[in-house]
Image 1: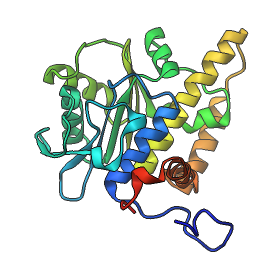
Image 2: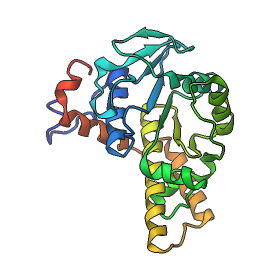
Image 3: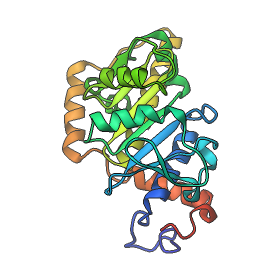
Length: 252
């Protein structure tokens, strides 16, 4: 870690984290991006053995450490951990059953994304960072179905998401899916960026959205690079480890 934080090169972009530490870093990074509606958000992270690491129900995302991470089975039963798992985990269990390609599912109520869930529309992409939350990967579920701890409500949300990875849930919040922790982070951050910039442009009186063809060219270029642009997740990891190294001691 010392070498990582010095000017010496070559060095790894970030240390190898245990999965619990990866999830704890993700919660903290997203909290700083606005994913912080008290304790109402939840994230699941599929593991190679078929179990899932999940965020604890009692804690806000900026205070989660690797030691706080829970483990559950595919049906939401607690296997490990000192806290409890949110009743809304049904949304995740149903989602992972329907989408085995997904490793991470994150749900919260970030301010700008939630503005557009209240407006009942997908915001335009006004710049290239907004276009990274690709228009063809966003879905609007325009029916509020209430508490997703009910199986029928959870399944309705999952069906609405289909094969997309970014969902605006009407009058509720956002659901973001990723094939890795880094992928989930990047999608969460760019979706909220897109919503925030669109709100500001519209508050200014309107603007010129990025043309659809330009968006497609840019998105195809990104997809050719990979699901996450180089160095993005690693930079987020380094920042969190610098902020609170004691919380992650022994987890990398």
